[in-house]
Length: 385
Image (tube, helix red, strand yellow):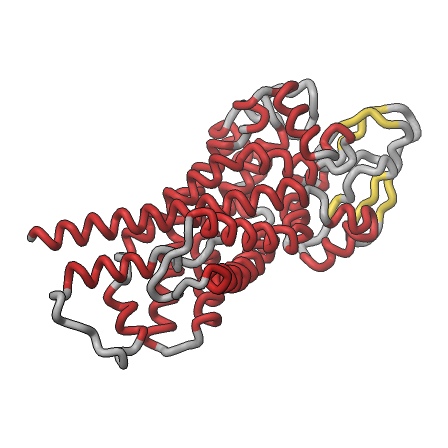
């Protein structure tokens, strides 16, 4: 879910050459580009620090919209959450900012910095190895590095995502405005309760679904981001090897890449959210009396809460989200489509588009700025040694 480390590279290269070459020493024009790139490669530790910082700040800024998206996907039939702006305002008024819109923030930060740092370390190492040592095509190298980066960081961010999603869906403790089926006092109570009652393996609920969402997202984001940057350079008549894009273009290319990739992968995000938050054991038995019927993630008073059971899923007659009694991603997509239509598959697409576009642009810009700052500090230290 991360962009490439292309911005500002030309400037770092220029500054490095100023420090390491005398004015009369000109590099032959026939020098391979890879050798030039080797001179300006940032230390992996710089990539980790810059990536962790960019990821944590980007996630922090957009966490409230992520909460809205989770409510829309986890309870798509709840009227007050159907519209993004109305849902945002409703959660803020009813539950507040800290416990409502920023519910699950601690869980998010528990995984954000370390997982993004691991991603960038893996991404940069893999990319450099494939391009420089193995002479593999740049686009294929970026895609492969993104895949491996996401996989390496998934062992951190998936448990964090499970905790975050449940706490976001729950909202405040003893929430009188929305009953999600969860009622944790806080992050540590959620961890203790989840492990003691459901087992530590629950922390990896939706692991396959999360990877199936994030790996395509990374691939699309890389492809779009590189292409959009090429268009940006051409539109401004800039030299890709010498010039830098302005900050507004860096932000817009990152936002366009993240937003488009996020929109196209929304159905996979829906399945991921349902798997991580739904609890099939909470399906009520057939009954003709008036009662409170908890579906997988919301309790509501309904009439005649009968259910239709099939081999792989359950359709509550109350029009609540279908319970995904299957670990198959494709089967899950089929179930949601059959029971809720295309609207169900793209529930939460508005907040997801805004979240991925803004978070992507902020994270990528901050990553490049932090990386440039660290590299310049290192060059200055070397200069005076």
